[in-house]
Length: 334
Ligand code: MEV
Image (tube, rainbow, N blue to C red; front, side):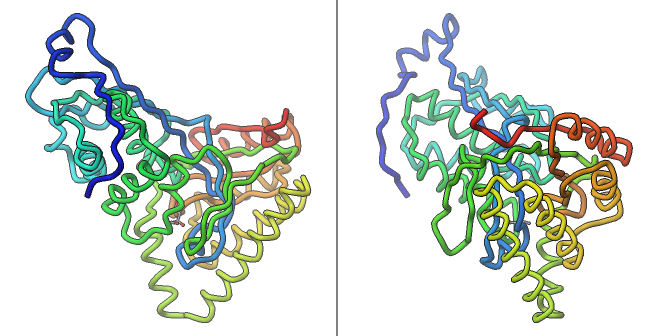
């Protein structure tokens, strides 16, 4: 499999000899993502809304390896890339695919990762690390990778990470704008200008996307019409939320987020810890709150009408067990 190639190596055989004096460096970045509404039902071709979330991000730095092997250096693992644990199989695959697909020289690389995206919290850390690494390798070889090529590689690499996906996580890792997404259709980017704050709270409990997706599949096999109706309702909430966003209607958006959480509960992907954080946000004055991502742990999001309210809600979510919170103003115009 070869994809269009526009290679102009920054690092030729000649320059490799000089690297001990002035090593070539490739850098790649990626951000986390938040599913605002529609997780799980999106796997069954109902719509979902997702946002890039720049408060948590990742940087990959590629330099020549001092050994004969590709080396990965991260908080989670440091050592020869091919010996990395199974959980990092997506990275091994992404590196191999990038080098082979674009016919890049297979020089031993040192790949170092710095990340503020918590792992396993439904914020897309798995796809983001792959995006950052692929971008860093391409930067190292001054290869101009297109969005389509990047998305292709990440999708191939991430097949390993999740059993059955809608593709929204991999898409969002490289998308710089909010999107409304359906599996069977082209994603539609849109402007998200709502006068409200989005709070993201890490429950401190690792989410289990793969288990949650299988759980929903089993529930669907067991109670097909119940699950179909729940998902159809979530799909309608998502479309109404899209309209509310376009009308800058934060009250309606918050209401729909809360309904979405209630319906995710019906799909049995919430748990007492997440519900406790959601409830704390409501009590502290959130316009809406829900789990985000796969559930069974991971993160909760809440909508606040202003900064003061956002700060109170963040405190309440921490009191209810959240270990970390971030907040972001949603009106990019300001
Ligand atoms: C996980 O971030 C979102 C899910 O809907 C799974 C997927 O869409 O692939 C639970």
